[in-house]
Image (cartoon, rainbow, N blue to C red; front, side, top):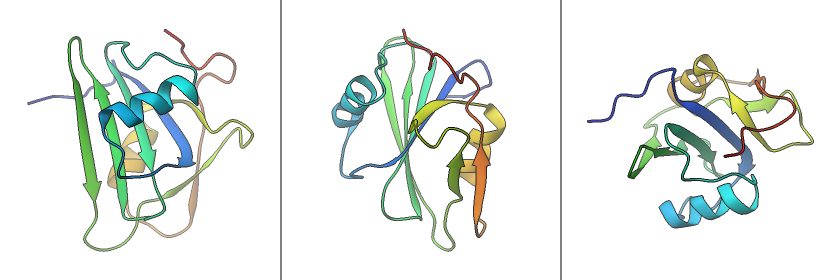
Length: 122
């Protein structure tokens, strides 16, 4: 069982993705759209699609990937409004990650990218 803690680098991709994508497809988005390496250990990538009740979370450990699909029975996930609307990705805080993957409320919540300059390439 994986235990995620605040030592992970957490990255949000705020544009909608095809939720049929698996590990390889989401790794492709990390490489091509985010300009990052999906193989960096202790990395978490959060994706959303058109359905506001579903999220996908790609987790990179030392030698493996895990893909978690989260779907709410009722309600919808918070729609993130990012601090840099021109940039659809960036590193976010542990608090924002928890808010985006566990909270179900109406309206938008602003998510601030931690690294307004370099998105943590590696």
